[in-house]
Image 1 (cartoon, rainbow over the protein chains, first blue to last red):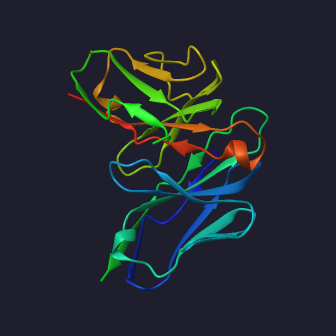
Image 2 (image 1 turned 90 degrees about the vertical axis):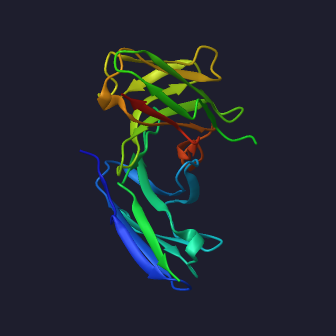
Length: 108
Length: 117
């Protein structure tokens, strides 16, 4: 069964680097997608792809079956749920398989 | 705002009633997806459209569920004879035409939260 795994909670202090690890068992999947989700809002895509990348304060590391999201200089406002997702390369639609989400807690 | 929009944002209904949700994707996105999310879980795939054609349905989509995308633009998801277990957030996403990472990249709406009493 295709599955994506990530920790349920990560706690940090303001100004630190937060790392959220993710790995998957999705057949024929190469790309990772990291989403940020605040309650009541649309999940927002942060970073994506099959190689290390950076978008502002968000860094993505990449291995074939695992990825980490690093949030640099974390702030209280970054406290939210972060989802890792992957999808298989197929000729048909690319449905995403999500992890259960990681709640990031930030202490001032 | 040119993002994915969903209506209504909240729906409370009684068990046995029918409900319908609407999703308007980003303009020119030809692929549209429906996901369901229950409390404490990640979104789970329900179904997918390419233009007006429904190309895949998950086993989660029982025969009480039906989705349409009649003109290849907006989509509706209907749940007939709702059950308490249908209570969840229903998310819609769209992706643009293209290949590889471009078409795999999905942009989500804010969801419709359904509560079945």
